[in-house]
Image 1: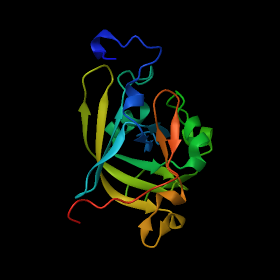
Image 2: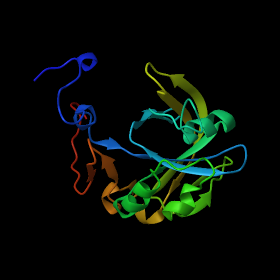
Image 3: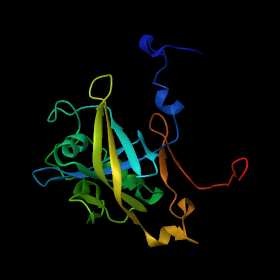
Length: 201
């Protein structure tokens, strides 16, 4: 099968998300200028640089009470900071509850039951019992082609790691089984890893 996206795929569901998979999930926490907290998962997410450490996530839709974007991007645009927590298998249901299209007056920490804690270097909440959280300062927001598509880039200025996720001096994903996003309504859990050395190493 071959299709050009501009012409449609002819399938019951869009296969694009299933093709680009698995994808890590950024559990993005923000605080608005009015002090209200927001928590939402985004699966268009990755690390993009080592020095200084930088990450990005993309938001691809808008809410009626935000017009051009979602609460996460709107808050980041206003305050310049955000946190990204890593989602474990144990957090899957809480993460899913936080993904709802709630009004900007709602606090997804309370709605989902996520543990709320404060960041150390920025005025922002974080998921207190996440395996790891990255505290980020906004570097740029890029407007992408299409309606309400934004890519948010940030420099990591603080890193939280749960002590029980460290083994022999390494952050060990097998200890908490990170959740990843597949296509449709599907997810996967990392339960097995292996090591490969690059040629010449």
